[in-house]
Image 1: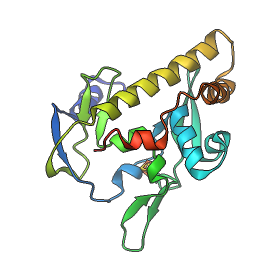
Image 2: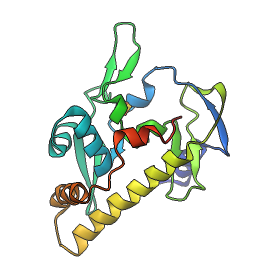
Image 3: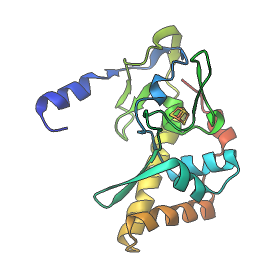
Image 4: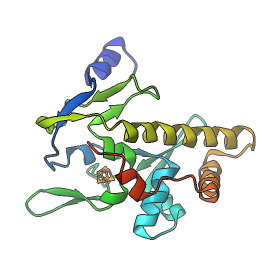
Amino acid sequence: MGSLMERKQYVSRYIKIGSSYKFRCTRCGLCCSGGPNVSVTIFDVIRIARFLRIKPEAVIDNYTNMIIADIIPVLALKGDENGQCLFLYRDVGGKTSCTIYPARPIRCRLYPILVESLSLNHVYIDPKSPGVGRGSEKSLPIDLIKLYVEEKLSHYRLLLDLLSSKGLNPVDAIYEALRVVLEKDKLAGIDEVDKLGEV
Ligand code: SF4
């Protein structure tokens, strides 16, 4: 994002919201088809693994791309050749559904709500979603937003610690972070996340 114009366009894509908003999912699948860009934390990975009954390492290996940004490893869900998330299912009528719906990443649970900083003062709603403005007025799912921020912070703090104090390379740091989280079992399970509200 180089020019001032690009930065302004980026900020203007979002509408800042207060304590309420309107949204009803139209199952258009647009949010899951815009490129393989849903970033996931180790916590998301473990919930997906438990749902699919496979090892968390297999989720990383088979369903994510690891982008090394400088020295920080970022995990993002893989997409197919059209940029559609590998977990998106489209029926013959064009209606879409998520095949890991109960364990979908928190970022997906929150969409079209976008948490653009780790401060709760920067929560937006993406006006590109066709469901925005439909349905009745809702309150922000604040507990879900808090968990999202908490898990992001824990994820990146742990990675930074493993990269700096243990001197691991970015790839090894991800797998070691997985091991540390599984050992501590600080994970909010699928059932607990379900109780934190939805958009
Ligand atoms: S995980 Fe599910 S909700 Fe998230 S982008 Fe993929 S299909 Fe969509």
